[in-house]
Figure 1 (cartoon, rainbow, N blue to C red):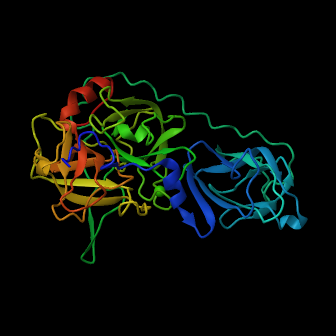
Figure 2: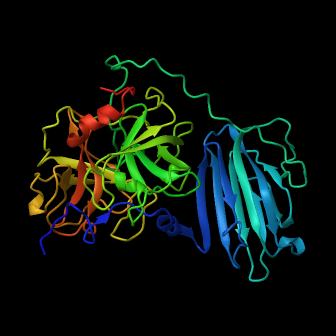
Figure 3: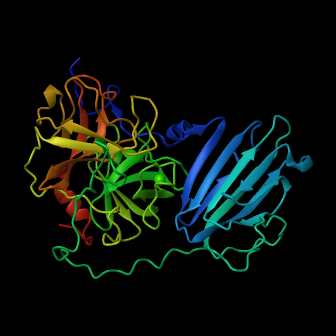
Length: 442
Ligand SMILES: [Ca+2]
């Protein structure tokens, strides 16, 4: 059969992950683990809510306020957990690192506040009767002075003290849109330096400060990657927003993680830097057809304007200056939280791989002008599911210039089977047109 890679089809697979599928990957023991950085608020609910929770369920939430100065407050709209003596049966246990612990069951209107910015909740159900369960909101709030200072959870307080809901910072002051930033204000494409420790090269975290992860607010993992290209937009792949049948997914709750390295841990997070940024709008290329991979390009308009002077861990990547360079023969760098093998596990930490960029002929595979191939003839190194939307960059004048967006491949890392990327140079005008008003770095 002639290998026509242009339309995708059964042969090739996108390098995205289905949200639920990847989410199910991350489990600690028998307890489903959900880790989340709380930017404003997250909802935690019992499995199957609003239906009855199943028997022998275990879910553990490890929440941390993105702002270390803030504490976490929980309020529940619904809380119906089968009552048992000392709550030894079905129960919700809440704790705080080095702090108090409280286990509850029955019907409650619980209200809690932590003393630190960390909060752990664990729900267990036994093999007996079931109930409706709970739906609670955990908010990141300014440490209130009026909270019980006994170190105890505020379990018995029936009045659900309304948390001073941290409203969004008043929409970042509209900067007078300048055409180009004065040279020297910000630089794109500068990787953070690699440290050499005892002769072993250690890739520092936040090395590629333009890398972002795409996820839904209350989910643990990033299902696609992307790159910051200016102070208001990130670039990613169009197919990240469609399911396997080609239906457009909902964008509700869509956020991008910036300045992150380990998507499940918060220990790597940089205070005030690593966070989730809301997505205002997803702009999918008008020629993209979800049945294939041509024009696999999308822009994410962010709700907040990024300030690149704040921290070196959140920066933009450079875009090619010329639209005619093919980059054939150059060394590309790809990075992402994608699977380590075809269909295998998704790593917690951002991985990077060096890949030779092929000539546009792509070893005779039939690709379109909008596609760029990269990989080793013998295979072994490649991008894979979960890497979709992430950047492929080359180093030009010591800066990373993005030349591709991870799109698809036939399996991952197979011999004679390159990874295919959306070719940025074919989209420069489209990107420029759709990001009018944003400020690029030089
Ligand atoms: Ca992290």
